[in-house]
Amino acid sequence: MTTAYYSFQQHFEHDTGDEHPEHAMRILAIEQQLKSRGVWDQLTILDGQTAHKPDILRAHSPGYVDQLQLIQPKQGHIYVDEDTPMSSGSLDAALYSVGTSTLALDDIMAGKYDNAFVSVRPPGHHAEHRKSMGFCFFNNVAITALRAAEVHHAQRVAILDFDAHQGNGTVDILKNDPRFLICSSFQHPFYPYSHYQIDKYSNLINVHLNAGAGSDEFRGKVEESWAPALRGFAPEVIIVSAGFDAHRDDPMAELCLLDDDYRWIGRWIQEYAASRNIPWMAILEGGYNLNALGRSVCEFINEMLGKR
Image 1 (tube, helix red, strand yellow):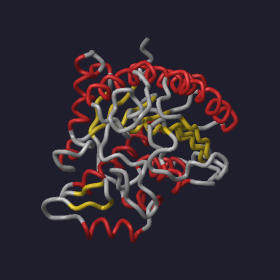
Image 2 (image 1 turned 120 degrees about the vertical axis):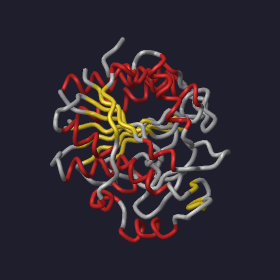
Image 3 (image 1 turned 45 degrees about the vertical axis):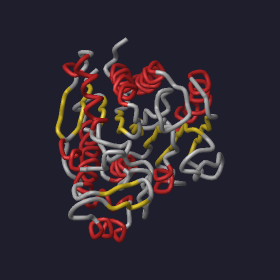
């Protein structure tokens, strides 16, 4: 397999403060693990780019984008919601998160790589059409999915989200659009306490995980719910909201997944995609215990590479 790894240095300018769980060390922890385990040298390492505004405006209202530009502080921090700090460099980092995600999409759709891992911050899947929340400003996955449909003319785009928190923003932006299938597993009841209904939206497969759920419940429910939905939908490209905060050691949730569960889900996606010759990519979302995050991403990327 040819796997590309995308990131950018501008994420360091997104200063969230000393006590915030979403900080620059997350990316460094991932890259340290990839290097120490010999995985880094097997990847094609690529720099990101900033976003094109038309891509953002497919998912977010012009007024919302303008508001973010107006409120960004020149120094210090403001909070755009109770969990989401903004510093003078935050918007630039958010634009790079979007642009790097869409660059990876363009490359896999052009056949340059079989798959791609996009290691970016701030994350995106909580950002709604007109609202920042949950550490997120722009919805990287929804923006990328819309580009796949409207620029690359993909008629069926699958989004798989295994973050511990439901990707409410992705659902808000793409709900009931038949071009997209959204498969989401998450702790329930839990933040963000919205868009969790089982049958409310025609293109959404929600998998509720009880607090304390571990490998058996996660794997069983993915096989039971996601697999038949994917087979029926027959996607042309897969975009993953890759959140690693369902790990047993993560402080931000109450699920009990292990490193090997991230290897398993990486293998599950890779085997599905390879058997149908479908390009796919993963965009980083949550994961806040640095050791668990680095190890879990490494396991996941090993499967993208086809390593056992």
